[in-house]
Length: 86
Image 1 (cartoon, rainbow, N blue to C red):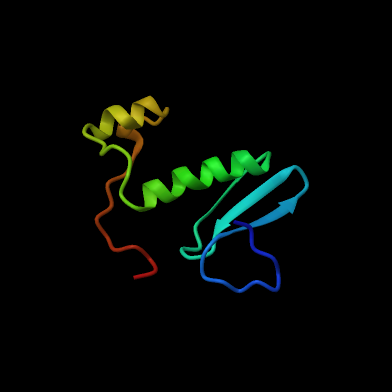
Image 2 (cartoon, rainbow, N blue to C red):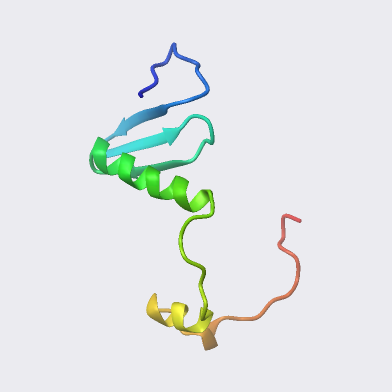
């Protein structure tokens, strides 16, 4: 379901287009994702909604995960102070 400017329903997906990018935003949650086409944006939005609702797999070994994505765990400073916005 697509939303138009005059449609203010609480459900559905709103699409915006900018250059070669399509953004799909779930109206109910406000979660958005994008892709190069409408179908890719919807697929990415479905994945984002699934993760938002607790889907996905937990990270069992944080150091191994960091190495997998190209980050050396030894280069990360441990900082237990509260986040600056708290």
